[in-house]
Length: 200
Image (tube, rainbow, N blue to C red):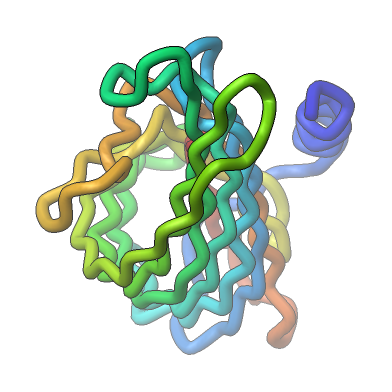
């Protein structure tokens, strides 16, 4: 995962910058997620398709896959567990610059997700049981974005706060996510926008 982070960061540093979202433009994207040590969050991928509603807002459809680390299970003596998440959802994101004409800004994302959770229990390195659960999640994610180019958006955050759901859905402060979105519509006539988001 470190190599992926450095590749994305290198891409961020090598691109030119842009200022606002272009209304009715289509932005396919991809986010990469990684958890901090002992967080239980391993790595994740989130492909997406977004439509800019105006200069400051975007509607997004996305898929999600996240593989958790194997960690000690306090309810299973001498055992450990891991979680795999697969789902899809829809989100609304609002963007704002710190100052007019600037390159940096903040964003807030509110997303609804239908997620299939798979729990795996291990003992002495052997898989002992697998259980699944379908869960609905509503989560809020604050983050930062950085102006990139007329066609490229970059974003980052430190996880999301879950407003609905129970199992392994709180990642705020436990994960770091970075991502990129690329405008495949016509080239903007004026400067457009990019954003930054966390690894979960």
